Image (tube, rainbow, N blue to C red):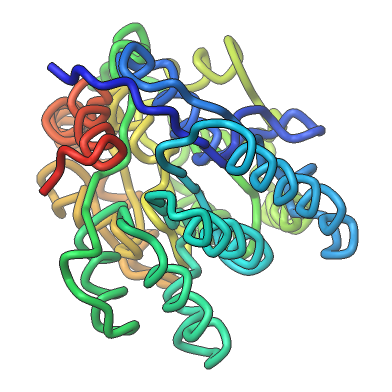
Length: 369
């Protein structure tokens, strides 16, 4: 068991946004600090949660970002900090967190950086500035923790940094929280399909509604829930009205707490047709709750899902493939049950916080060699 008690300055998401929304970074950070690692590390937390999703204008984010940077300087200069742990997304988030990494390096502190955005590699490919800046941030980090081997290899090839700098630690869950959310797809009767998250264009929501419309003649015992909010919510609702799907599709809005758990428990199939992802927490939650999953093969998702083993993988932006996958699940309830069982087994094996926290600890206390 770990014995040292390092003091770690942790910059990440520790609270919901002002509008109550929560994301994968919030869950990952809060799950980590509440795991057994808290018995071995003294965390000094600096919250970097954005005020809303989508994020507010850049000018609105500047003052909170400056405040966080000043807090980092204060803690590094006035208290004993052994290492710095930084969770970052892309864009403005990386600008700020990169500056924090540089400051930590000036104070000669060990820094572990967790990039958590599914758009970061594409951003680096499109822009010389972001490629240069990301390389600099990662070069000044002692370790860069990737959410899957896809991201690790992608960063190595794109940025030309040493392989040993990049560590893969798969996203984690407290899987015990999902034991009460199991359900079994009925042989007959109502089959419930769930989309839950940001209802944005790049989450594939339009393709999803169009696919449901194509299967309208087979929706007699199928009910679809689109839970969340985002910039494509009105467009999705308009499509449901256009296709006269109101009897089959409902929009409960953003759900948290007991409402979220009840919605997951009642569902049999979880759909995530995103254009880009890192390692989506919503997908892991659905698998932990023993749901069959249909998802696009983007980011590190193929590191988690194996087609027709523990889920169904489809290409991004491929409406026909999504339609076929939905149709397969509607027609084959035995397949839904088998995918559900295997999904849970995969989470137990690879994503349990009970083993992940030890890997994180070894980076922070220096015991990893």
